[in-house]
Image (cartoon, rainbow, N blue to C red; front, top):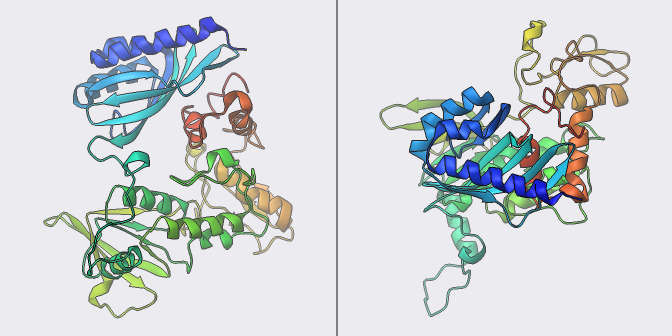
Length: 415
């Protein structure tokens, strides 16, 4: 049971931090943190993904950004409960700046901020059409030229990329590209998603037979449409593939399957990208293949077709993202060895497949660095996040985990 004094202490700390932010006092902001504290920002205060470690970095970031961002309010989220374990008290935040609104997460230790996460949720003046702002749908009154929803949707799909150009072109239609496309759709930003596979979700369907998501359901929701309450804790790959295909259609995304980006060139004078696209194997260099967009997003994912590593890097590179593995002998198991660099998510995915299904031994030269084998800290945090005592609203579990700056190097005291 939470000690009421701990909840009051966290509320007092949040109020102190709010005063410092609103006053744009960088020194006072830094004083709210432990010497070893962390502030991870997702586009709210830095317009970037930025982690500040220690008072020095936090003070420097606050000094550089607070004047431009204009913090206006910070408070504990009344819809969430404060929890405490092993000397760490944590809670959810809401905040507002001159340009946007967001949510955050805070962990307090020894009366100071240990970890702070701030994530921008919406821009003022560009709020998404959700809840009370949702579209009406029906149009009343007589209009013989009125188009139905289906006719409007078909016309948009026919014109975009041909008669009208997108503002954003997303190269790669996996779950990341789909989620980004859904967000942009709700903001009214014309967007096309390019995917080389025939159907949305094929990047999952075409992986190895026994694959299930490694992250439990609480961390896997896409925007707007959460998984149903009976969704498996660890969803099979083909089920995820079907969900992505359904999601793409229901969210009305302009998804160009069986399409590849041949080349991309940025035109400085026009301030836009010209991307040559082969859609459905049309080829021929016809005008419809030259898509122009202000922004180009490349979402290759973890299974991107990148060149092999070629040689073992120095041990100093151990904390770089896990690279694709390569076989040292043969092609399909049977006593082969897998060379795999990196100690994070991919090691468990591909290495586990090699151990359990191909009969291959896994060579991981950095196994002692980062997570222990089996990912105990990360797995324990996942299970704690799904427990009744730490269960925030849907869509927040990933933020709670993301608030830890490095769950391998700085494990949670409860683990």
